[in-house]
Length: 186
Ligand code: AMP
Image (cartoon, rainbow, N blue to C red; front, top):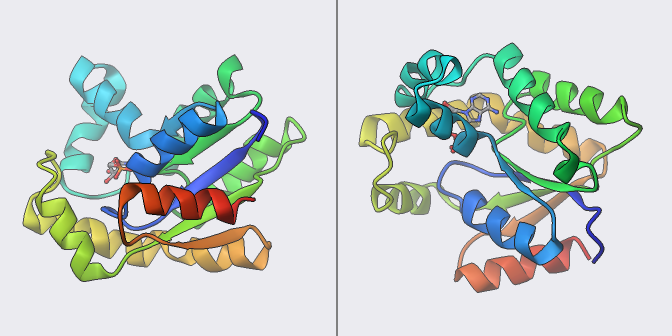
């Protein structure tokens, strides 16, 4: 496939979005745009953005929409993202989905597909327990799942109505799941 694929990877925390996004990005020759990684980098650098978001991230809550809009608009405006990208971790609510549409629409662009990684809740908790990330403590994991159900899951219907949703079974080996994703996007 040519390097002009604009995809969103959607799925609960622990569903394997980051791993799969990285593989897909390599496979398709487009950048992996992970808002979580960008924010973690900002925290590690101690930048203004990092200082603003670290407490929010550690609590498992969502960073505010205007801040995220700025982060994503800046990243997608870079030349390497002009011909495609794999977005991982954005959008996370309906306002962000509309913002993304506006950002792309301003350049006459649109998403090609939204991959939904489906993984049962028991499996998510088990996976995150083994990951050892700063925001992977049990209470915070529970909160991040709750936020996903409340704020992010409505995006499933939103993108389904637009004919963009491609549900993919996220259980099994990393290789099996990436093969399913590639099949789902044709
Ligand atoms: P992730 O690596 O995608 O699970 O993101 C880790 C954390 O970064 C989340 O729990 C949020 O606190 C924050 N974050 C990442 N992406 C977003 C976003 N699109 N909107 C709001 N907060 C975000």
